[in-house]
Image 1: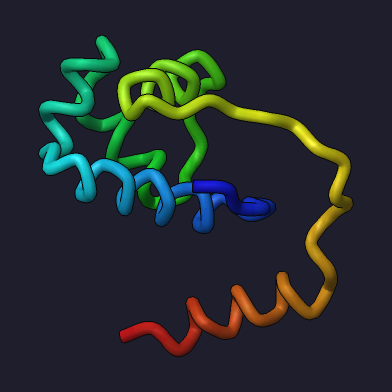
Image 2: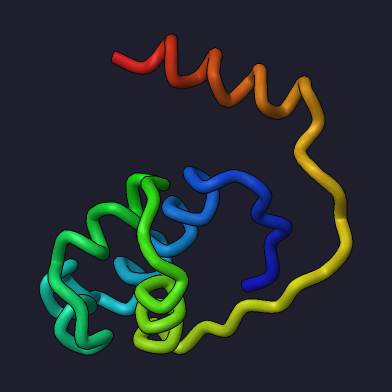
Length: 89
């Protein structure tokens, strides 16, 4: 799994996909990461949490973070993301 993730909701979606692919419930992931279940909900929703919580969840999913210079999301990418949110039921 290698993706260029530049927005919080993209990260949340990939974390959820990985968790589900491993057949884990949110509570199981939280326990494995040593965090409360709310942390998993927040991360998967693309909401704010601590860096240490993100790192713990990544580790529990068998993932690591790698930083690469790719630039910020374009204005079009951000506008599209807001439009998707507006169109959601």
